[in-house]
Image (cartoon, rainbow, N blue to C red; front, side, top):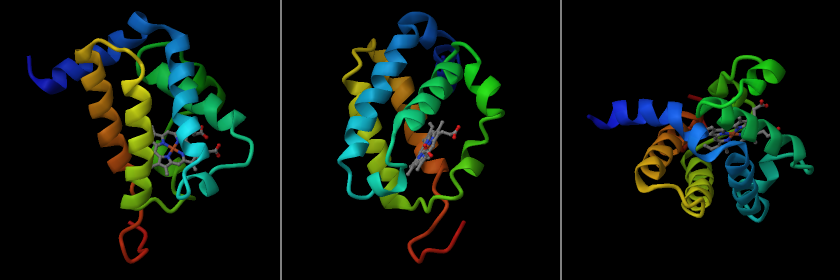
Length: 137
Ligand code: HEM
C-alpha cells in the first residue's frame, strides 16, 4: 500500500484507537510550547481556552471522531480562517516544531505517528500565506 492510502486509512482509524482524550492531551502539550514561543505567542489571544477547544474538536473530527467542530464552527476552511494572521516560513516552522514534539510525546504506534506527523507537516506548509517580503500569497 502506498503512503497516501495508508494515510487515508489511518485518518479513519486514529480516533477509534486513541479516543477523545488523546487529542485533548496533544493540544495541551502543543499549547504549552506555544505559550513560551516568542514568534507564536503574540498571534494568539491572551486566554487560550477557546483556541485549545477549537483545535481539539477540529483534530478529533479530522481523525474520525465526532463532528462537534463542524456543528459549532461550520466548515473548517482552515486556510481562510488563518488569513487574518501573517504566516510565513518562520511561523509555520515554529508551529510545526511544537506540534511535532507534542505528537512524539503521545506514545502512538509508529505507523500512526508517521501519518500524523506527515499530515501536520503538509498542513503547516499549506497555511503559509506570506512570503519573505511580506507579500500576501
Ligand atoms: C502554520 C502555522 C500556524 C499558525 C501560526 C497558526 C495560528 C493560529 C492562530 C493565531 C489561530 C487563532 C486562535 C484563536 O483565535 O483562538 C489559529 C486557529 C486555528 N488553527 Fe492554526 N495556525 C497554524 C497552523 C495550523 C494548522 C496546520 C492547523 C491544523 C492542522 C491549524 C488549526 C487551527 C484551528 C482548528 C484553529 C481554530 C479555528 C476556529 O476558529 O475554529 N492551524 N491558528
